[in-house]
Every structure is written in structure tokens, then in C-alpha cells.
Image (tube, rainbow, N blue to C red):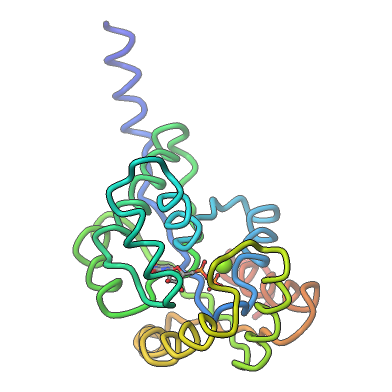
Length: 216
Ligand code: UDP
Ligand code: MG
């Protein structure tokens, strides 16, 4: 009893405020690939909002499975109440297990004003958004990459019809969010139309500069 009480006190003392990097860019801009690289080098924990939604969709008897499936196929953005719960739970679970794991890459979120408002309502006071990593890549290249990926990704939205809708949603809804953060000086733009290794060189420059290493 005494030990468990102390255990939870120590855990609370150790608990640090989550530090978040949002990772945005069109479908196929390289978010997921580069996040995997960042995790290996900088020790972040990576959550893709899309992956969390796909996992939720695939669960047995889940309340929102069908809704999520339809939104994804249509390239529309799922209501934030669903997404924010999944993100919050994923972050809480990570920090409950290890309170020192407080650096998160949140990939593919916030995608529209509904997402941003949901974040601000639930998370703004509970997490610090350090910056937004923005992979800038032309729609043509994004389309090409996703169609290539679609050959074996098994994703219901890596086909021409869904991709056109996803790109439309990106241009209409997500770009303005990136612009909002840019006005706050929070966007770190990466040229995404290069090879994975070349892009990672640029990504490292940004993370090293943010960590106070290098002369950027
Ligand atoms: N999605 C969503 N809200 C989010 C993230 C994703 O509704 O916060 C849905 C949306 O329908 C999107 C799809 O999940 O088109 C796939 O997103 P993902 O990030 O996996 O695609 P990517 O941009 O990585 O290709
Ligand atoms: Mg992705």
C-alpha cells in the first residue's frame, strides 16, 4: 500500500508535459517514412492519426468502425472527437508506462479547423506544440507515390478516385492549418520531392537545430 502510494507519487513527479511535433503534408509526402527515421535517431514516439483510425476501424464491434471506414475511403476528415480520443489515449498510455517518454510525433493531424479546435479544447493546456514539420511535395508526385504504394499497401484509399478526394481535402482544409501555424512562426518546411535519404538530411538539420546542435 505504502509502496504503491509512493510509486504513484514518484510517477507523478516524474511526469513531464508532453512535447509534440505535428507532421503535415499531402498524402504520400513522406510523413510516415521520415517519422520512422526520426524515431530511431531522436527517440520520439510516433503516432499516425490515420494509423490509429485504421486500427480502430478494424476492431471487432467498435462503435465507429463503419463511419471511419467511409470517411477514409472518401478522403474526408473524421470528426475530431473520435481522433482526439485515440491520440490522447495513445499518449497517455505511453507516458503511464514510462513517464520520461514525453516527446511525440503526431503525424497527419491536425488536418482541418475541426481537428485544430478539438486539439485546442482537449490538449492545448496539456501539451506543448514545439513546431510543425511540413513536407512540401507537389500533388503530382504525391499521387504517383500513393499509387505505387497502393500496389501492396492494402489501403482502401490508395486508388485514383480516393486520392483525388484526399488531395482536394488537403488543399482545401489542411493547407490553411499549415498557414495558420506559419503565421505563428511554427512551421519548419522540408522539400519533400527528393529521395528518402536526401529528405532525412534536411530533417536532421531541423531537429539538430531545435535541439541546439548545429548552426542553423
Ligand atoms: N484521417 C482523419 N483524421 C486524421 C488523420 C487521418 O480523418 O486526423 C483519415 C482521412 O480520411 C485521411 C485518411 O485517414 O484521408 C488517411 O490518413 P493518413 O494520414 O494515413 O494518410 P497519409 O497522409 O499518411 O497518406
Ligand atoms: Mg501516413
